[in-house]
Length: 273
Length: 247
Ligand SMILES: Nc1ncnc2c1ncn2[C@@H]1O[C@H](COP(=O)(O)OP(=O)(O)O)[C@@H](O)[C@H]1O
Ligand SMILES: [Mg+2]
Image 1: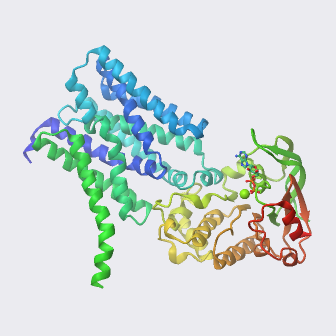
Image 2 (image 1 turned 90 degrees about the vertical axis):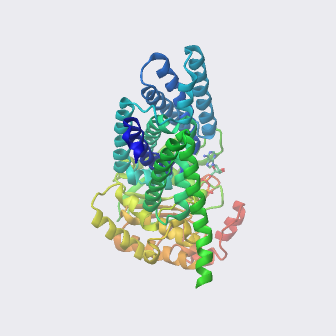
Image 3 (image 1 turned 120 degrees about the vertical axis):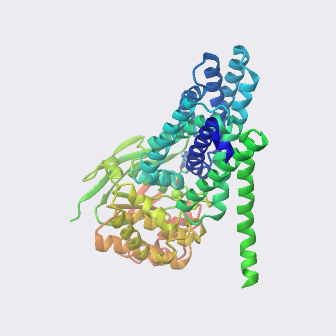
């Protein structure tokens, strides 16, 4: 394809593929634990990091990573100690991040187009240093989830049971939310702050329609996310659209098809039988 | 003479900003015995189990663990606990029965082959081998409870603590759970502690019955248990009803 003649597009594509793998890997645990709001909050918090990065001239992706790690750590501590107010803690950290970001952006006179590219994602601006950060993070997320797979599975299914079965649930929860923070932080470059949370949840929702085991749900959600991201980037290049939007629309189409498959296929089968 | 496993010595417990649940209770749990806990709703049975498990601390008195250190035991998977709430998992959860049982074992063991053999063995015991590859959320209530029991027993814990495992499930599942627990107790020498509203369905004449009521815990004679518990105690709210059923 002609689009791959460009270095920047190769980079964006590579970054997109890594993100397409780690977003649903984290997202499946988030969705099943009913923690999707945390992902949403983290993406808003990441904006403060991006703004700080833009102002200081340090990499915005790096800024987002630092702020998301801090934010996710704080969210988990609040969640653990004030269980009843967990939702409130998430809402408060979300507004804090957003408030700080707006403040920094307005004070720092940051170029509007740059801000937009972080809000909605961009394929033209993925830098070499972005790629390095995204690749390292991707590896870290995948290896950690692989090592903790049984524990994450257990905690997701039944946190109390996991605790009594000898799982250090406090530690597992903390590691998980830090991984979520990292994933969100590196995903915003390509997908955009506003659309990273959908990428973590929609492919998972689609795979839950069809999967008949946890491993299958995980595999399907990765496949769906990869298709959405690859398709979304190609479309956004040819039609000059923001990739975040095309990626999320592609994911929604897949969700729609999977619901259709689930509802319609049994009817057709029973009729032909 | 069997060894003591744990001993409650003058234990009282009150939830912060909540009611006094247990007052000055003392009793011993012995290794290899089968205990049935009975008492009206809200009497403090679940609370008592959590004290045993070490996740709640007595406000007064002490719990002495002979022969086991509860925290280390938990870390090593030597305690099997099935809570009252375990069945309230997210029904969307896609994990299969065998994936769920396997997760318990995988926390402590890395030997995949052995692990899968053990999963099959436990599922066979609870009569769910044919459901091994179905999502646990798709099973009936009784089947789900059997799957959770398989998970609880898979790692061969020394102590098995179950909170109302028979409530709201079909008769066949109740029967299977009874058989599995008694097998585990008699042939493997494991200590079993179960809460049930329907003890006549769960214990035999060798079991020891603990009545939890009005903040007290007392051992009861359990000969002719069926005469003493003519109707299931299920759903009884007032403690006077329970006493009528008992004495
Ligand atoms: N976390 C808690 N905080 C405050 N009160 C509680 C808590 N858990 C249980 N209780 C109260 O303690 C009493 C005993 O509860 P529980 O041990 O669950 O009873 P049972 O299992 O016998 O039905 C009840 O009055 C209940 O309302
Ligand atoms: Mg209870």
